[in-house]
Length: 262
Image 1 (cartoon, one colour):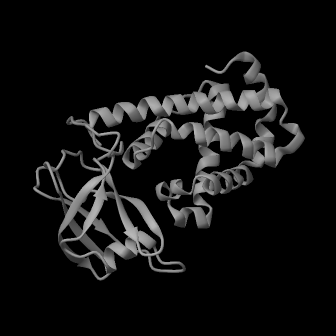
Image 2 (cartoon, one colour):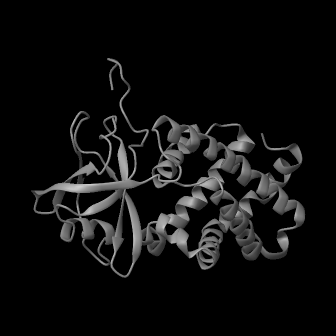
Image 3 (cartoon, rainbow, N blue to C red):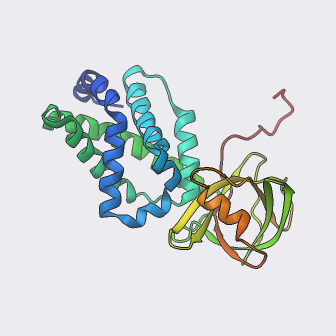
């Protein structure tokens, strides 16, 4: 729960933060990536370029601040973010980096309006959000048997075929161990090493039911300006025998295990 003193300050400053949220997010990412370039591997560079990532971060933080003030729960949003973070292998200590750069961005964008009291109040908002996400992500990782040191493991492409003129399916098999169970609707993170662009990760829905000796994903490459980095690489360059890094299955958009109507 947000302290009463912080709640008063957050309520008073929320309109200004909301109005500048995308500028704050843009400043935040620029500063964080400049100091920690390795974190670029965790973020969709296409979404960075078109502003989707900045808008998503701004929306999530604002929604959480509003929920603390109104008492309206945002558990579905928290679950959705936690599943994606767990699939990417986000570590608890990385939230410290995010928090420091996010508060620095707020101060840079809003200037003198960010007094020590304002900074403390928004720092409290961030850490309430972060602790809730860390707890959810830790539980998800434990449920899926994820090794925190190796959240993504090497899998081999054992099959590739066209589903249509603009879609391909890959069959993936782990280099060690069996294919983990999944629920229909879940996804895996697939990370590939791109020539000249480092490692990039994307989430792809598992496109067949559980109980197979390989896991299938189906990819429609993004063609346009620019082309999709990862989807294009998968469609045009990956071949049988290649190795990619794959997470355990995650995602909360699934059907309940009962006979009630959808």
